[in-house]
Length: 401
Image 1 (cartoon, rainbow, N blue to C red):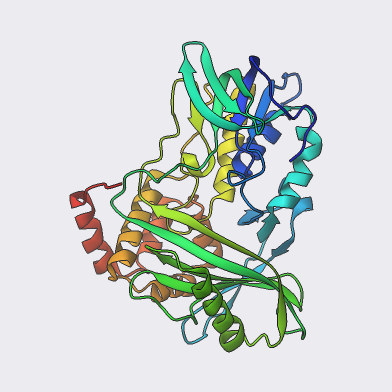
Image 2 (tube, rainbow, N blue to C red):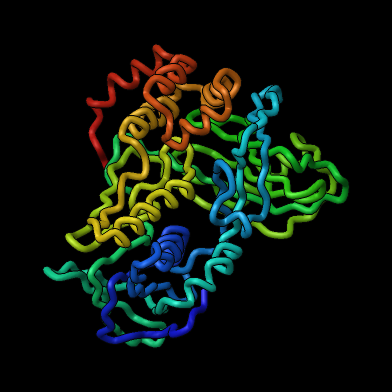
């Protein structure tokens, strides 16, 4: 994302350096530059990778939110209805009711929308080579595309770069997917309803698979094939699965693919350290924002960056808070272990939850905002004996890289 002052700054000093310009880095910078009345906005330097393999491709973020949100003008679409289909195709449409919406945001629109406020910060386009904690702050060494090395000094550094590998874990799966943006010749889509999980896909021996449909009109949608498993597929395998899903399951008829996206999201019970030094912190996926059982992260990133910005504006310790409650992470670990061992039928598990638990309560649970008594009631709708057996063995498992 271009900004005034892009380039290298040797020896520059700022209040805050943010590394990375994805959802976490941009959200934090955007919030820091809007302090409460009477509070000075901090001096912020945003370090973005140069064009090339370090820069992520365009991507789609989805989240549910009550009422109007900060990014509503930037949304591609939003919905008040969603459905989870069983393997036989059964599944009622859930009306989210009230003011809850399921929202779709594209990264390019997000960057453009935040650009006016972010023009007030300084941007350095370079690859970060090292981050060093110092007694009075931190030092970031980076290299520009032309080979120029620069050093940035800051009181606080927030690093949103993806980790090279997830932390050691007792169970580690991957949510891997490929999606097509399709334009259908006929008006065959239902634009007011998201197909959140459509289990009319061939199920793997371990883990699960499902289709995911975000319709933006009667003719257009993002259609994804997703698996929870250990190993991603090849691109031809994804495309074969998408051809089967769009043709044999959805019956879209003739269509053309206007764009595609593909990704892998770690689903693990590894412990993500949010502090990398006295003055260095990790945010976003690197700071544990991804919910292990679902792969959703955008809403947690907003909570995390909002808390950091509020603390900095108030002069409090700006350590990023946990993105998810500890008890939610413990329950996720049990579910992932059950899916990985094959003890839990993933399609039956999620279908039953959405059938027997009020949808809005279940979404609050997946967002980590339910009370223990609500979580206990949700737990009774799962295969209790299997979950208890799996929970009992978790302390016996070692954490492995």
